[in-house]
Amino acid sequence: MTTLKVEKLKINYKTIEEFKRFKEYGIQELSMLEDLQENIIENDSESPFYGIYFGEKLVARMSLYRVDQRFDQYFDPPQDYLELWKLEVLADYQQKGFGRALVEYAKSYQLPIKTNPRVKSKEFWSAMGFTPVTYDMERDLGENPLVWYPNGVKEQIRD
Ligand code: COA
Image (cartoon, rainbow, N blue to C red; front, side, top):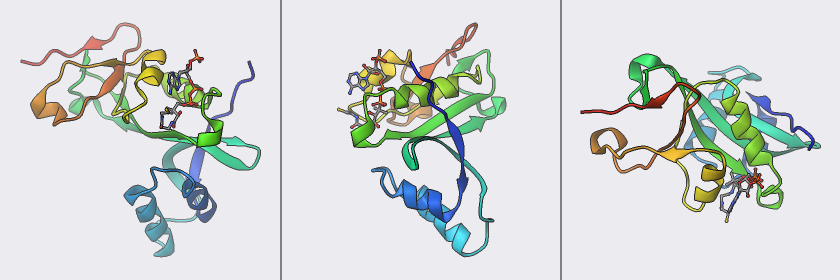
């Protein structure tokens, strides 16, 4: 199997143009665009997005954010973990391993990962080794997070 190259995406007009092809284009992208236009951020500044190009075209992307140990309510022992969101593969490129390549890249940090899956992606996440947490109303507020534990990490049991 060929390995797909995961790249950290820079915030610039080209990246934002590419983002428009994704269904989950919303407030986060619009605010990046505004910040660029108003020179609040520089062209080519760092973004939380990672992606895979197929030729010149961005076909898969995700956002990764490192949450500090102090805020960890999910893992035992408490530690820094990655919040993964906006994982999406363009329709014509699904089921070809792009989603897996992005998730494997996230796992390569060897930190626990938390995500809030979209409906209809359950099989994918279980193929990736993600499991649901015990629902905690105060913490999860109606969401059903899925998590991935690296070796030696388990679920944080809350009283
Ligand atoms: N149903 C069942 N299994 C699925 C699946 C699905 N819809 N999508 C992926 N999988 C499984 C594959 O069998 C694969 O296992 P394998 O590597 O052992 O063959 C594994 O997950 C990895 O699949 P991959 O090719 O990397 O998935 P992807 O690149 O299509 O990425 C999503 C998965 C969910 C991120 C991507 O499809 C997406 O963004 N979809 C849009 C959201 C959506 O509508 N999803 C539902 C489609 S019906």
